[in-house]
Length: 206
Image (cartoon, rainbow, N blue to C red):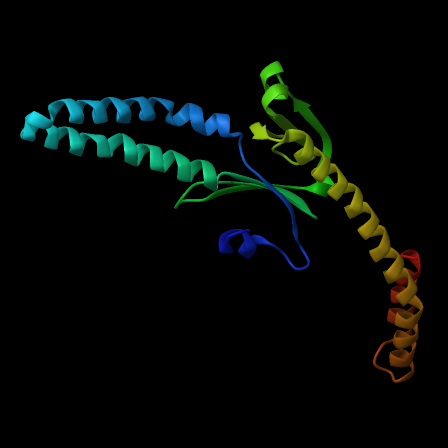
């Protein structure tokens, strides 16, 4: 299920094919220290129950790692890698959002790297090389990278077929467009020179 922010970025007839995130290892590694600190403080609270002021202080202290842990979880959840039928979108941030997208038309090559542990636990890096000024987009430690890469390549291939269909449809409409221009020429709305110029442009698109 996608949120309203993601939906608001989609263009007309654009649809989401896949939403991926970094592997849960990334989240676990970022909150591991906070888990240990929380457990240590909770143990201290149990030990210090006979000393109420000390226990109260420890209870307040445990809120800090819990809030930090909550922030890391929300940040991980909001870091999304989205494949649509037109582009690849990278979204980061909780309140302030950072969005980077790469058009599938400009994707020249896709490189996937998986370590031994990455193959065991199904995570890896996906590098997208594009024809844009940025050149390279690197998605590090993404979950199920094979599925992500496949979805992106299939979308790029389908985009080529859609473009071919659009051009064919436009080619089929060109005779009708020329006929409409001819009617305008006969009514004096379009000059002979304008008609011939536009006719040549339309015929070149067939």
